[in-house]
Length: 147
Image (cartoon, rainbow, N blue to C red):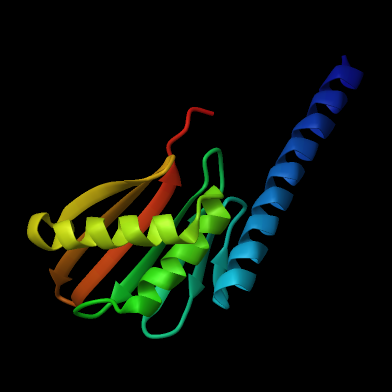
């Protein structure tokens, strides 16, 4: 009985370790591609900072998702470029497709506050808020294929 419990414990630790390693690899790839700075990390989530008031979040899993937040009135081309590059790492979909979908979703979110657009097999969702801390745009991309 002890052997069964010990074996189960070792197997569960190896699964957690593999999951943590794959998340670490994904985080490292996003950081390298975007030149962002890692701010906070847990076993399956990371927060990063970038230039011009932009922050990134990455949720590891099946599927993984990445989000980019911009504090300010209207994000510029750098925002969409950053989002496209980070999204490509998380989903494997072309950065240009993700970037174009983000532009469409954000344009609609200005009117409706929240919107989404397809990017190949991924879904890009954007929201635009104007709260007490000022205006903010947040977009996220997640692969919507059945896993």
